Image 1 (tube, rainbow, N blue to C red):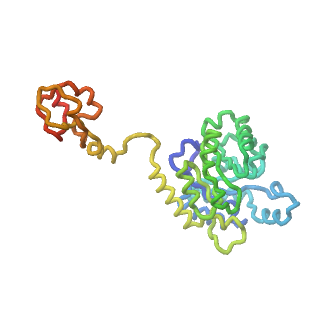
Image 2 (image 1 turned 90 degrees about the horizontal axis):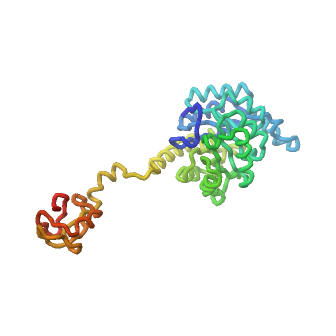
Length: 338
């Protein structure tokens, strides 16, 4: 799926994002490989993080700053990754961590992602909103008031963004890994009820079970960290990531779940239509009913199949004669009523 202009409320199937993030650890060739692996597994999109280390991490954390600087990719490298994603047939987008990154990415991405850590970085959210592009806002760490403030910041710039289906809230727990008892997937329902926008799920649990459950609960976008290899890695994001085999299996399960979920429209399925006559009941004779005698209610019973008059016709049948005698256990048909 390669949307030119996505509406999160109009997605026909779950949009699966392989969150490469910085699992490439600054190796652009590895990032290219991971894009191709994610696309081959069936991912609808791949996501990165775009930043300049000095605009992201303070010097008070020198070790963290050094690591973040080491994982940083250049503008030309991101342009190359966009080309690779296009060639692989998957959507490229990224999380900007500074307004300058927003400006750079605007020509490369069809929509933006706001990280959980930046839910309260309202100047950044305002800058993203001003691009006019759809937005995914992750809600990890966020209180109700903080989430509302973020949405208010968007609508102050773009009043119709929420009703246009161009803003999605992602349920997220910002713990790496997230314990199952803290995944709180019921927050998907809470977000939908509180804010009335499409919801998705950004996962930090081990394995893929939480993602599968989230799809069954109505998540329209699933974001799972992705890596080329989970084993023997130092950077913590690899452990919570899906490898190519995991991702392919997850997407297969998601598509299977979607088959079971079907449609929210209340209508008979083709299989039900086929079996309906055998399942429903008809009016039938509880005793031998002679012809020409007004039918009494106690003479009527209700039997399968639905080849005769339906149960809803009982009131109109009582007191009317039959045109032929009907034996006990026999169905009463429309042509039998005088």
